[in-house]
Image 1 (cartoon, one colour):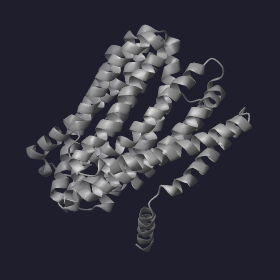
Image 2 (cartoon, one colour):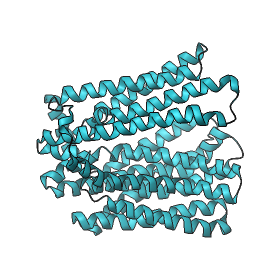
Image 3 (cartoon, helix red, strand yellow):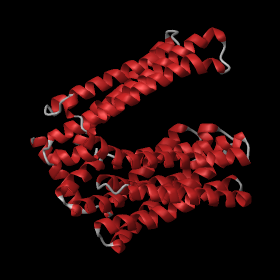
Length: 438
């Protein structure tokens, strides 16, 4: 994403062909290794698990199909998933949505007609292959300058991708460790029921995170594009305005969750999960604070300063572990949640903006002023409307619950008119008119 976008602006398709084919070679090796590992797991390891002999061969076949699916996704990722780097996330996401819908409909039909897990796994592989093929064809059609060939491979490109990618790799590993620390601690110091109650709340926060990432991630090629042009002021604009608007969205969700979490968990899981609702309340507002900084992540990836993200995540992991161990002795499972959110508030509200400001040079005081206005307005409106609904209506069914959520969101978004810059509205409308005329 970083290098495609940069070279696209420079119209250097030779470099992009070198990057794509080098990436294709590396991912092909990973795909081949995945198939090898799957064969070993299927025929040398799987029978060591407690699987009934009559279904062992079926399990082995399913594992082989799943392994083939993973391998195909690796091998084809450079071709099928590169459209986003060329600013065509509309095509990428459209294909993903179509694949999900078609696959799930097919699975339902298969199950209704008595088919089992082998047919289900084949549907995953089949639709994945189809999406990858269509994506690769779309890339070639939209950008005919892209070519496949061993002549484009070179060590310099591989070294460049390695130096950039290894930092991203360690960021992913560090994030996975942090994401699972809480469950490990709870499982060690408490019981499995506590793990389940905490994990449910944590999974909702992950969905929340994925929603915000769907906005922030597509900004990476745009930021790389502006970086290639040397237009840091445009990157500053994206960071400050984008973060401001995302804070408004996240605190609408946060304020709504604070008052409606109990009703949601009770409707979904029934009595006995009151702790889950409380943990969700503890986690959601800090998430609303740190998730908008995913735009900062996109900025740092886009200008090749993403090593700062790694340092920040390492600090978060150390603080998370230390505080969780300290607080769980006094506050139990809630202490683990607090040990998670305290570092997030400190690092992503205070440290991350300072890192980005040192690179882009904007006024930090103005950034915090607009951020605070967004947070206060979103929290006040969403909390006030949610509280009023809760007092006036008994939420005893999903229809009432969803109606309440829609009402809160509609009123809160309407109030957002007061924080939106009129120039931004004009820019959006101008861009829409240009697309329509084009």
